[in-house]
Image (cartoon, rainbow, N blue to C red; front, side):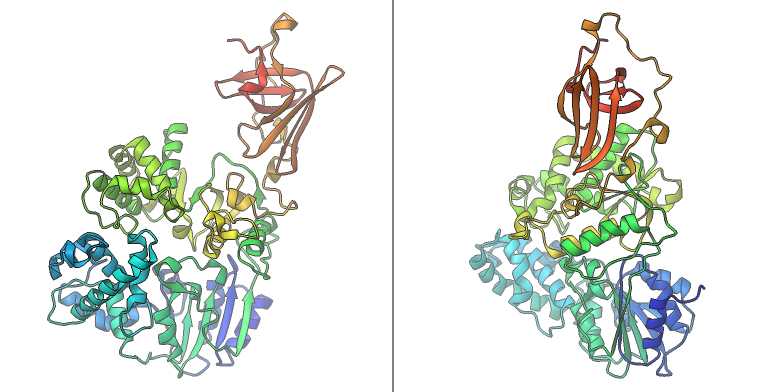
Length: 598
């Protein structure tokens, strides 16, 4: 292992005091390496060291890299003494479904009338129990039920409040059955973690390291606050907090710290990508802390048609990109980070709703038929489902499922894939040589009303996570959310500035240009301003001066291309034409051309 950097040395020095420590670790700053340096020194309080986190991915990485003297465990593993009992009784499963609750308790529509039917009501009950399990509370109240009830009541607060009273009462019945050893009701992993935490356990360690602290449940924060016998080392990046929707909170400020240090030197990417990350941090995350790029990395910004990974906010947009890749490059092997299961479940749920069958998918469980989804996506609260509606209507669920089935399993050998697809959530903790951001990230609204677009601070955090997955090249030219946050000094098209065919563009110097014999019938590039067919927000300006043709390309105020000279047309299709202006090559929209002949 290399010698500690100055920032790592500061963290080690603070750790060895045995007092509570917070480490703010920005993206790609060697957090795991730093934590290994700490745990290799043992507990400053001369006892056992525990490293814990919610995510299985970081736990797997830590187990491979940390010394065996350090106990490495997920939050749920700490409670396995309780969880094992549920497993042995055959009750442990994933999410309990609304249908299971209806069957177990015998609920009918009238139990939730007039605000919901039994299926939607049972969904709200399950969500209330889930919210309780993530909280530090000791009893289920209407506060745990209100969020799901508001969704069911389409934002009608008065009706949602009335429904929440009923739902909270039923949720308490579900919880009582969940912890009853004689019950047969299935339970989730969160159930036994909550049941264990309610016993106020004392963790057997004198130093406890909590990683990914920015996405910790309120339950775990409360539990760790009670471990007053132990040194707490809280590690995370508050600007990567992206799981509030499942009950996570940022614990970066939840404890009393004697020391606080930072890791800001990124080892993942160079200054160019760091500039984009810092622009997002400042504009959307309200951060005064800045990342420093790694000088040894020559990272670039600019368009690419062949990224290593496409990143999107939603699975629906990724499925759309999958079809686009199949259309453009039919032989490409495509892998989905984390597998296709989430996509398949979403499409399967849509297929059931089209037949008016009940579904359990958390994004669609509140709907009774596909028509309701069509209506809901007109509202901003359901804008995340618009991509799914478009895909299902355009391709059909059978075609979608068949396509997903063909690529299932490819992610197990990512090195053999030509391209990867991932949501930003699934990509967290990963890195890719080149990344293209798709255009479904929520842009921040104007300063006077930043939420007018549906934007929240967590949207800014997710965008920061996505932009910092790239190592060598970041293409954010199609991502409106990024473009809107950048100052003029950051050029997303930098890799194209002053491009020529001898700088990596396809060369047409030896091609057979079309040269009609009569000047009146010769192809012409029309004067004016034209949208660039490949560069989002790119503008082609064509002028004539003393018979000389002049062409310039700009995007977001950045000059990308200039050329002067005679026109040669190399080839064209129904959308665009490839032309030579003197020795400079570019593509123009077909409507900018005149007198093209087959």
